[in-house]
Image 1: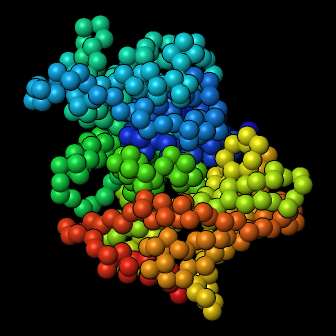
Image 2: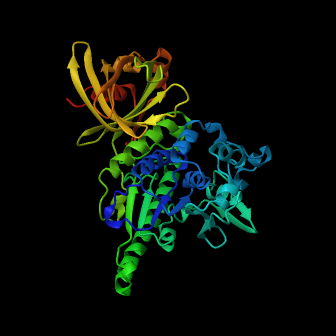
Image 3: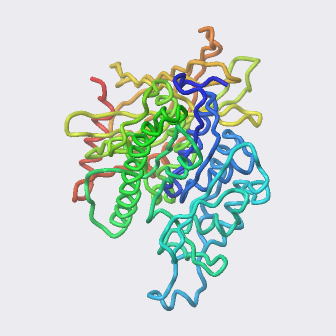
Length: 476
């Protein structure tokens, strides 16, 4: 395995999977990128939603298998109503839902096996829960963890009830901390790789749900800052100890989204899906791993801070067609997901993709996306170049499609076809073809598109029209 951080080849490493609701499907893409880079971890720690991915890793699943499990997971598995009687007393309810479906459907589909977790010895793993009695976080080791611990660890107060284990109430640790860095330090790790899905934006939004999310952000980021301070103090004390093994500083590496990830309601209402989150996590992790800061991140709020756009428009497009190369599967499906962010000083277009080849092949996420636009008689051409790994070898993809007019996008008349070319690792053109998007997919893409803002005002058709106009003219 190749370790990109050559300055600390012998360092013990911890992978720290923080929470983030169902957005932690993003982490599955990050895991695939980390595996491809060859980084091996001695310790894996999960908190809140990160417990799902930590549990799958500790159950013996590979990152690509984990990603595929997320892609095929039905969202209905997360929804399980409490007893009808409990809703008659809303002010005495312990949670709006219970954990039955997570226990029976989600854990089962994701392949989380307590017996496998208890027995695995490839790496140390810990799962964080909040002990309500002592108001502290307990890191339960894999040898002792039970299914109830894992359920408690993802039971967010108000939404799900706490779990009683051995006479003590346990719940999601997010209100105390959302990432247990100091547990990694106690494990002896010198490199802490944090995968962060929680937002860290400056604007305080109105509405009960937004403010609930803000409370989680404040708790999670506030606790993280305190752990940073503890690690900086530990580094100072280690240098005074005189022990040669303590001379190397503990370093933090943080993989996160520059622009905040969509919240759970966007997932539930299909504004984004697991595949698109995985593609985002994979591409962003590949970008981070291509230029790892040699001394780690500066341990302050900048490590998790997001750029907050004034408006952000997101939409998907899924194209299908045939290849003309006999050595490739005949059919393929190519998925694109766009996030167009409008800032006061400039705009930014994020593009994420994945390729699905027929014949039971797993979906392959793309990376190194670059987009350009050019003018033509019939409108603007959007050109996207990206890379994918097939059997460990880098292939280049170049696609073009026309962007004609905002009204056509709003009516589902755009993104009809895509010119698709692929080259192998030796820059040899493998095939080129034309892919098409069905009218149903185009209409549904418009229906599930999303335009959101940080301003306290409604978004009308006029603003949606002007944002799409900026999207079409992006790059000019």
